[in-house]
Length: 235
Ligand code: HEC
Image 1 (cartoon, rainbow, N blue to C red):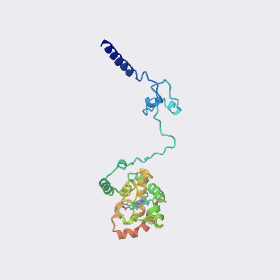
Image 2 (image 1 turned 180 degrees about the vertical axis):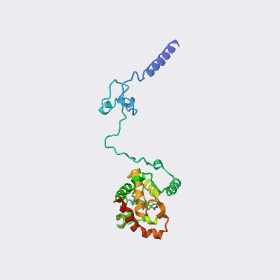
Image 3 (image 1 turned 90 degrees about the vertical axis):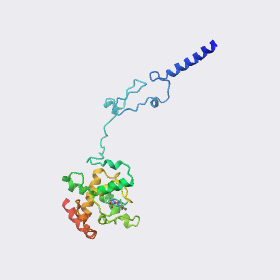
Image 4 (image 1 turned 120 degrees about the horizontal axis):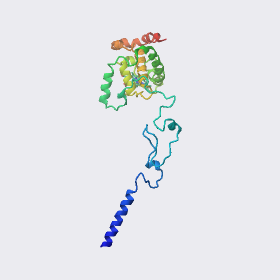
């Protein structure tokens, strides 16, 4: 009986000692220590690892006093240099939320960009429109771009036939609409407004709403004339 008690005590004692010896201060032999003691750093902390006194020698980190949060590399392009990003653009929406946002966007008749740069913004919008949109919508905004004319794609509307505002065009570029996908991945937030401004000024007679409320019949015949009127002052 006493022998058994001694045995049990010995076994429990050994187990307790061997379990408690697995601590960070006294690491057992491990493969790939980085998996256990990550050298993956908090962005601004100095890189130190738990199992050696080795200093990080990666030059970019050394220059940065060991901190691993580095600045953007040279030549990095700012995604939203106009600071007009639409926070909601990154959220998933239900159809109801989409429709509510679309209706709200129709009330927006001015872009958030600096009005002093309007002529330049529209000119840049035209360049982007011709590259990005005209394949479907046509350079004249009549929905007769080369893809449509070739018969490969259909259902592209004339802008004249749609009740749109600069806000709603921007909304459609950001979130897509029916058969037209979102352009948020191709155009920066500021450029989406520039293209929207160009669409309104070239095909709807101006960025302000006046022309959009005219009877459709009048609007249909207007684009050719309004294109030359609105594009000439930029040159
Ligand atoms: C792949 C062809 C395609 C391209 C490229 C394209 N669109 Fe569209 N777009 C469509 C189609 C199709 C519709 C009709 C969607 C619908 O049924 O409402 C449409 C509709 C629209 C509308 C009307 C939306 C409304 O509120 O009624 C606008 C404005 C518009 N596009 C602007 C643009 C602009 C600006 C670009 C370039 C950034 C562009 N689209 C590129 C196919 C295209």
